[in-house]
Length: 344
Image (cartoon, rainbow, N blue to C red):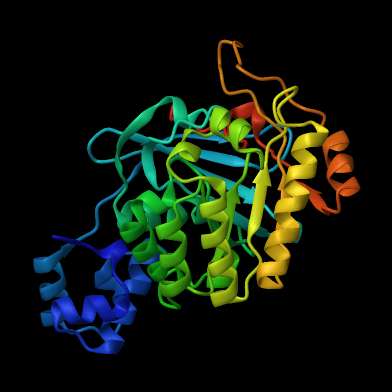
């Protein structure tokens, strides 16, 4: 059966022979967390058709973790087959606004060395409704006057390895009758799948692209991100350039300085050269985000030590790279960047 959370009003109307108005009202009820019978002005025959062809599966909230040091909140959510995924509510600068950091897979196959999810391996892709439901459940934690302003696909998994379901979820999340989140406030973050980046530009040209760089030095990047052996950074950057030319949107390049690994002057110089080439190719300047390393081993046997992020930002500036030092919150509840491991 179809999952109601994964349907736009048009898809629901087509599947169940509803009027446009009826499908909008039913989708709105689903996303408000109300029984569809409460939708006013929907025929009984229409409701019967929906019950016959669709259902509303659920993710079970296994635990809720409130950070004691900042307003980050992490949900551990159980899927119907007993898997656990995590989603994080991220506070934005404007009071009352939040981003939803959501997972796209149970685990991840890419094994990035600085990421806890990469240690899990890949169990399966999430369905579109399971992605949408993370946003709906995070929204349910909000108080009066608060709202989910944006979505970042930077939780567990590689979004572009599950592109069909991720893109379908984005279309639902953008719909005015569903979550009504502006596509320009959504970012799909990838370790570097060129075909997926090009597809994102074609199919969802208002959605932003985030790219994990790790290092602009190929040998260092391969050490940290095994995907470099399959899709070299030069190939990935070329696809990101095509995305920028098609959409006009500046990509976000993210780096996590690791002490003695990728935080030296050579790394900064290589990134500066990469950025200048990108700007020359596209006329678009990437937004460079430096993300502090967060511990990923609960037993304290972390493979890396945090690099000096301030010093690395200064090194980048010396090579013409204006970088933003991103605040990575929720570390006390393992909700910060790189820490999601479905252990709750």
